[in-house]
Image (cartoon, rainbow, N blue to C red):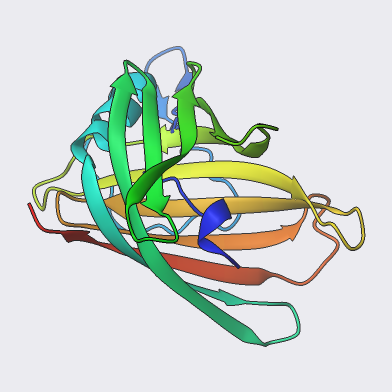
Length: 203
C-alpha cells in the first residue's frame, strides 16, 4: 500500500438517554464494530472543531511508516515523508517529496462539516483519493493525545467489491498512529488490517 493513499489522521460518540418515570439512566454508548476501545476518555468536543484542531496541530513534517496484513496473511510495508500545511479554515495541503527531494504539494484535504472529509490529488486530472467520515473525535486527554474514529469506503480495483475501513487513531504533538480494520462493506470477507505510525521530524 503506497503513501499516496494513506494520509489522514485523527467523530461522534453517541450517548442515548433512557427516561423512566422516576429516574434517568444513561444507556450504553453505541459502538461500531472493530473500534479499538483504548484511550480517548476525554469528553468529545464539537466534531469539526476537534478535527480542525487535530489537523492544524499536526502542521509540519512527518516520517510515516505503514504496514498492511492482507486477507491472505501476507504483510506489506511502506514508509516516507509528508508535510501538513494549513491552507484555510478546514483545509490542509499535504506535501510529499518530488524526484529531487523537495517537498511539493500533493493533495488537498477539505473538511466539509459534520465530520465529512475529502482528499483530492493535485494533478491536472484531479481525482479523489478518499472520502472519510469521522464519527468520534475526542479532546486531548491528560497525555496530550486526541482519539478519533472514522470510516471510509473504497472500491477494490480487482473485484469491484466495496471495502469498508474502520479506523481508530490517536494523535499527539509528536506522534500519530492508527489501526485500520478492512472488510467488505457487507461483512462478507475476512478482515485485513493496516497500521500507520508517524513521528514528527524537527520542530
